[in-house]
Image 1: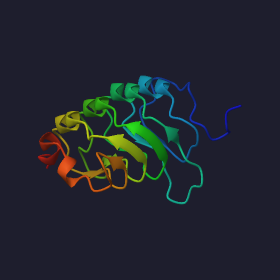
Image 2: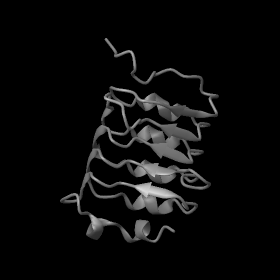
Image 3: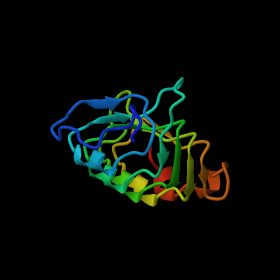
Length: 147
């Protein structure tokens, strides 16, 4: 049985506002079908509930996304290269990418350097990217040049 605060797998595909809140379980790949959503924040600082598992690559279909946050969860695996498809990510006040304090491993995808409109916050701290939490030497040039 699915927990009562799990993310639903069916939502109206014309949803154009935001999805905010604290959830547990895994992030369903079906969220990628919500191509008009501009804000997806799946975390609350005081929540005891946590999301787990990988970020679905299908989230990359949400091309209008300007804000994506899922910090302080127990998400695992590598960061999907499809995050570089969020061409509106970080454009505008209060927007950004927040994936800190998870259990991501591997390298930071060079595709994140495609976020040419990125002007706001970008957080990946306290993960297990590259060989340790200190991944300064593992930041791809394409990402390091984002302003």
